[in-house]
Amino acid sequence: MKASDPLPTRITGLLMPLGPVRARSMFGGCGIFLDDLMFALIAWDRLYFKVDRETKPRFAEAGGEPFVYQGKRKPVEMSYWTLPEERLADPLALIEWAELALAAARRTRKKPAGRRKA
Image 1 (cartoon, helix red, strand yellow):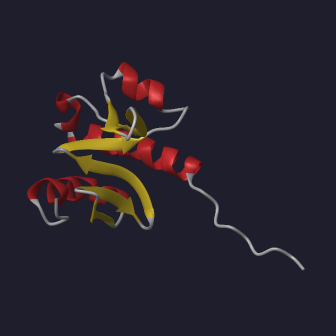
Image 2: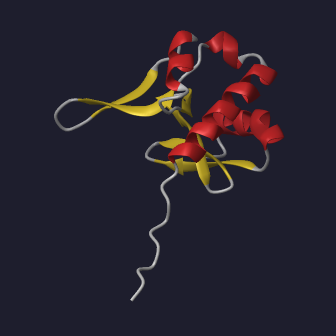
């Protein structure tokens, strides 16, 4: 999938109220970024938002499903979840869910390794 394909273009357009959102092709899908923070992905023509311990229950209660891929030995569940299609149809609701994903991505962001003092 290319970042310029119709679905990534549509999603980034809908998410622009959050700031300069962009899509980047990766692993056959697209990562959705605000600045350098990935908070969503598109795979197999589905949008997945970043979740963490705090937000995962809300996505599950809304009827979302996790992003799962087949690992070498077993299926692997990632920390990205879908929303039901009817929730994606409402642009304001989409922004609210995206804000939850951004918050989860910020909370789980890995800190860059610092320099060790001599």
